[in-house]
Image (cartoon, rainbow, N blue to C red; front, side, top):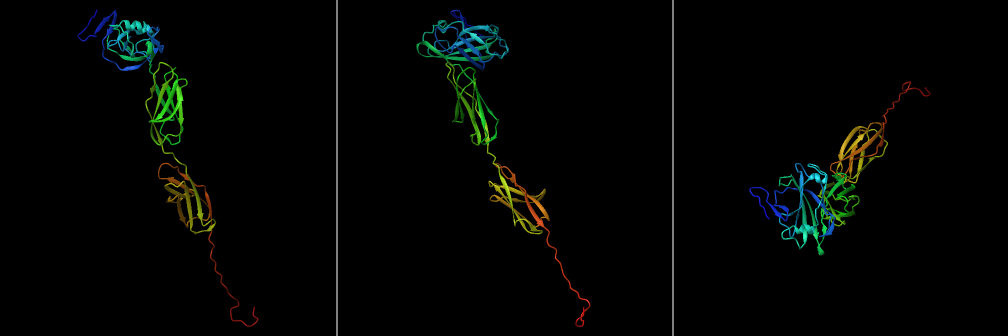
Length: 366
């Protein structure tokens, strides 16, 4: 017997006492549906569906449909419209819940018209969050199984993989960065980390995570993903969203040394040339100081900068050279103190001579 409701209502088709709902307004998928056991055959009992989350308000009920070869295009109800409280859940809860199937797949196939006799390919289970009377879906969970030979099937339960990086970018070249992939709990396998299409490494999953550490990321924007390949039967692989990680040019330390010519000590007013040598050679300027007093500034050319002066004061002078880079990639540096002694210039003297008594005098005069 068939009963069709029109005028905007949901079409219902009664097939052997099971109501099949025609497609209603589709809601977005809000999670995955894990099928247990993860393998079986047409006679396998105890099939159950585990959601990855709850049903959003105002949903109060769920139903589960099965789609695939031999079933109607709109699917056939596997679990009837039932209150969430039946499964220990409630409207608006975010916690996962489990829905047991009421019959084996063979018995479910017998409810189709005509009955399903050729099980092949992939079958999808759709858990719909809805209200008790409304037909509109408020959120869907999906799970799949795939049939092989001799009417045996294996679940293709979805997994999720997320990826995080520490420390957060950007970081200078050579920084040790750890990428941690988190995958669906309880599923074994390995994670392959890639930078674009380049494989960085493969790490086994332990306690739902796999971590890969590298200090060899190239300078620029890197796009890193984590692909999980499960070894647990009944689970499909998954790939994380790309994590963009920027690596900047490494900052190289410089050293600055200072020399003077002519060598100390020198007399006041001597022309002294101070030469600062920057290693590695880098563009920038050098500020020469005597204590805290700035003597002058000179540009660096071919790794050196010079400053000459005749104005060093008498005494011990403490001269330094401070390098300031003009671009990125190198650090500034300051030379050790160079002590330079300046002595006072000699004072000029004159000598005069007089005689008494005055000339002329007789022989033998004193």
